[in-house]
Image (cartoon, rainbow, N blue to C red):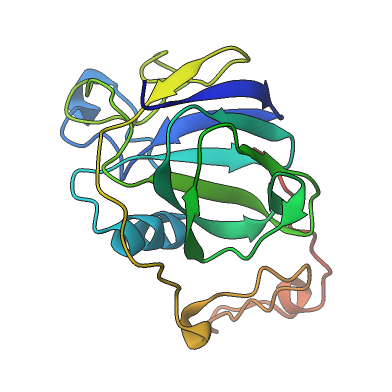
Length: 197
């Protein structure tokens, strides 16, 4: 069987793609990957088309590999490990049967993406794999879930060029455009960027 077995989910792990378009008139949420940039890189590294990926919110996800394949991990640094050894992200990895993939610690950022060569074998709902809590569409990963993936030959390992890897720093600079009605009061205040999910 070509699959991962979910040993632990962490705070929240879902399957995402670029979102569900064309159904807003029916009240259906667009959803899709929160960090579209990182998601797109997982797909590009694997040459996936019509792909999907696991969106992992903070650390805690653990997967057991049931069949060899190639994966890509991009996005937040959540302490990605293979068999307990920390590995680079923003690149691909060949993984083997019985390997344990885990996200061990929150280093920087909130969401990481794990994609598999060929994509996870799931049915699209209204043209998308994306999970939506509001409509309860798509897949929210639970302990014991078996994630099947498509058979695909292994490939050379790839990585994102360093200049294209964003820094998920805690201190973020936000630029604003001033208009004629900009208030001194607005500019003199302190603001906090929350991590609401």
